[in-house]
Image 1 (cartoon, helix red, strand yellow):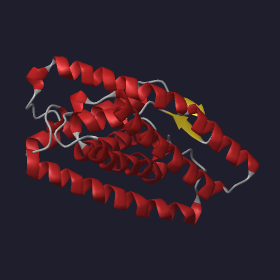
Image 2 (image 1 turned 120 degrees about the vertical axis):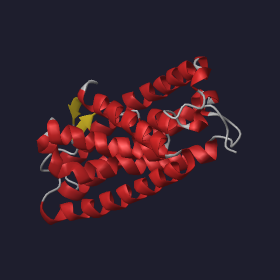
Image 3 (image 1 turned 45 degrees about the vertical axis):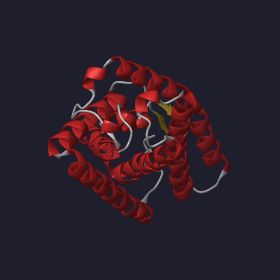
Image 4 (image 1 turned 45 degrees about the horizontal axis):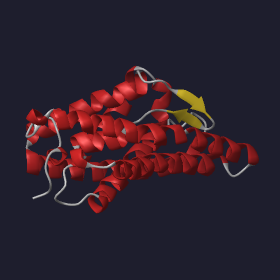
Length: 226
């Protein structure tokens, strides 16, 4: 979902500074909530694990340039279920930054657009999870329909933000619209795959009940809200 260089240029890129600042600020708020609830060691460990996984998603998993951007298997809902919203927000922002600084410096000018594109859908599915997952239910007990809704919302949010940046930067010409639609269609494969990955991860977590209470994992993974 990296916004390609040249899609948004000049003064238009200033908008992304504001959206990124707001997204990072809200992510910091969620991280502080995790800090107060679970402690600093848990927050740091979960954020570090999320960062490492995000880096793997970007640099190790297959990537395909399609239309206005690239298709990545970014398992946003998986990270949310494992680590919680605050640590995942840190992991997405930090993993993207590490990739840009050390492996893809050409992407750094687009960092604010890319981080907005990753974080805002995360906040949306965190809110969605509070609505569709009963308070007394653990994440390991989620059904396919629930994880599909989370995945669809996250990946749909990414497609929507990429489309916004492309149309904002390049207008509504036929070629640009075709590239946007081609990118969106390619992401349908990710929408199909991610719920299956989520279910596999949750199934593995169910067999590892000894991890309940681990500071490396979101408490909601194994228990309902108190």
